[in-house]
Length: 371
Length: 120
Image 1 (cartoon, rainbow over the protein chains, first blue to last red):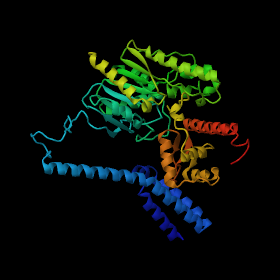
Image 2 (tube, rainbow over the protein chains, first blue to last red):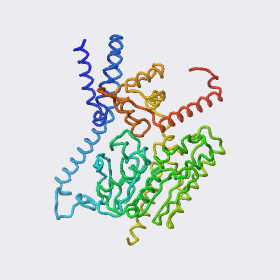
Image 3 (cartoon, chains in turn green, blue):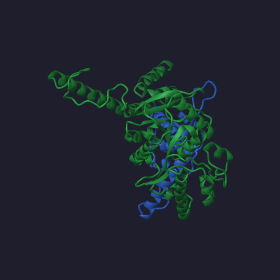
Image 4 (cartoon, each protein chain N blue to C red):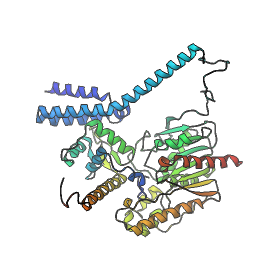
């Protein structure tokens, strides 16, 4: 039985190679262990159970692997078509391959590939002095200043969630997004991080990746608190801010005043310290006279988001959210509040162009100011 | 923010949850579990109507971990197995999904498409 059992396991290993490399790197060992457990149990029950296990595994291998292989096939086909096009074009004399002073009939991009301000987005793992690695993805002119940095809330979302925004920002602006520690391609750690640690990791990342100062920081949701904290700690590095439906440091206790059931942790010192919220009745004192745009959702949060709250309390929570945005816009004498029509909280997915416009406006203001 | 409790639209817009994600979160609602236990519990919770294989399970686990809806707890001792636990955001999302399903059931009852207590 042992030999047959091992043969089954080997077959499973072969099938695993059809799965994506990153899934295998992260969970390969565990998937093998799970298969072994499943097979052992089926072994006790007999041939039908073993057959059922294999049917399931073959079905999921086909279901998961097919889209990836189809995508690769598309790329291959596209490359083949492009290669044939260039070859035919070159043969017929419409364009030449390689550098040539002759005017080409084929359209050429405005910039050469090397050092191009339109350089494609590229992601890298950056080694931080503390030992962790963080994933950073930058696009646009590498020599441009200021550098725009897009920050998520501490745990939710990765650099990917900014992809639509990053695509819409002019290539003359250097824009970077990153996966926070514990998310996406960045290192995963078990212990929870206080907001101070997160801010210091941001600083380490920007230094290690040698991002050109000054920065324009863009913070979505809880990322707003993060970039305000960053500006407070490293004010000389930050020339402008954009808040994307940002959270507010006073929100825990102000929402608790509407309903204590809203978050039982509202005044838990550890939770407050971890997330950067202020304790009961403490006011935000932060102020920065730098270019600042606050983008606010136009769609109110649905009351179904707050089970247990009455309609009145739900309305009060929505009103409070609006007053947070008004308050944030008043924290700089250059502050502007823009309500983004048709947008909910996930503005970077729903209205990426509004965020790109705001970023470009802040960058323009920063560039026009002699520093 | 992982522990953000307000305006969880980031989470709510994930609804309705894909079946595999829903059952992984559901299985973890009782407490932390390793992969195979999650797989067994999914079969049990769904009354045998839904099951996942290792690749689907870990593709789902990876997605949920990346969204901070569940967290990995490192393996103890020589066992390479990790266990997984629901994060506060994952728990809220699961509750929101139940709430959504409840509303659908209520609607079906109001429209007299199913009777109260009827099991289908």
